[in-house]
Length: 98
Image (cartoon, rainbow, N blue to C red; front, side, top):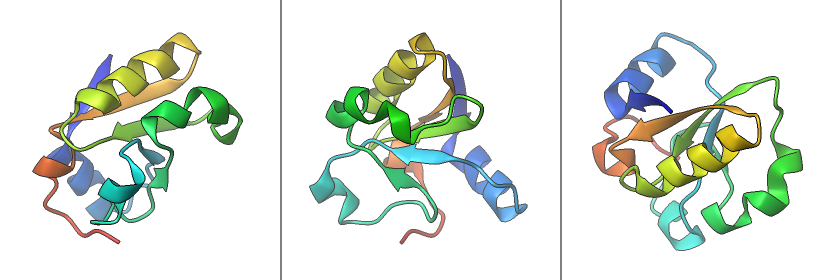
């Protein structure tokens, strides 16, 4: 499974790169803020919402600490998606949030 750190992702975003991000935290966790531009699909809803993701696009998967996003990334990879897990999750994120 591919991985990226929060600081590496932040640098890419600061450099103007468009990154497709999926935040798999729960609704109450998202209320504290998410990375600007990330879409929200709670981990438990991913299998039912696969049609919202495009297999031709790469995705970076985000959660609180990197565990759930790792599970989501592993599942999505098995379904044929190009995914990268953000290690450390939002606990490591220092960039702006919405």
